[in-house]
Image 1 (cartoon, rainbow, N blue to C red):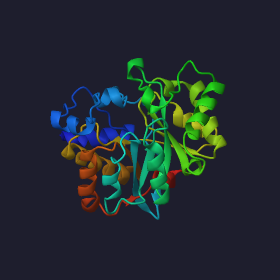
Image 2 (tube, rainbow, N blue to C red; image 1 turned 120 degrees about the vertical axis):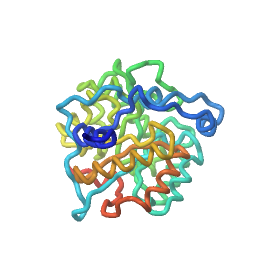
Image 3 (cartoon, rainbow, N blue to C red; image 1 turned 45 degrees about the vertical axis):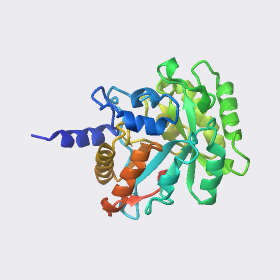
Image 4 (cartoon, rainbow, N blue to C red; image 1 turned 90 degrees about the vertical axis):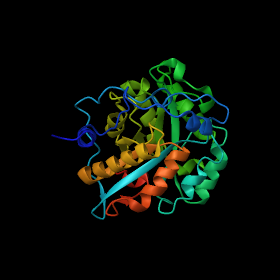
Length: 298
């Protein structure tokens, strides 16, 4: 009989995702306090719009991709820009420099200085674009203007242009990719995703679907317009505990070995940095760590 962990791994390989369901552990008060810095923090499923239902059968995992015949893992750090020094522990991890991808929120107060620092270091950047979640109360205006289902194609193009223009001119070419923040409602709309993709295509960019909805059509819309696109395979830190994050990293390894590549999304939590610092030197060394842009092929 398969163990629970084995069942989880099989589910990831087949569905290309890890979903935090109703059984997720609650965060400890001390962890939340350390991250809050005086602001209320929602649970992961509320804040990051994590889907609770399995992905539909027609969704397939990312196609096998290898670098020099090695399986690969790409780790994307979302929500960059909310706290000035939250990214520092990740930059300090030996073995990850140049391999991480950094998704910057256009409306976050610290996004510009952090973007300048990351560009100087040669890191890979994405625009982390807020999109309409299933529940309107989960919209957070301080993250930047959201793309909403009531917006027309022209409005989406204008809002995306304004999002890029929140960054200085010299930074914008480095925002080569776009991934969605939340978006469990909007990414199900073929009309709206077509508009998003058209805007990214005009900038010769690529798409990473954060996969907050099992019914997302973002990647399909991108491929229809010949825009490079991939989907997230694993969420690393829905449970903000080091051991739980380590377990998700192990699952990411299993997905990479099975499919040739894996894309993992995480957030600038202290627990995530600690878990990555432990894992990076203990991991399967046959798996190469590369920025997500290296996976994108037309």
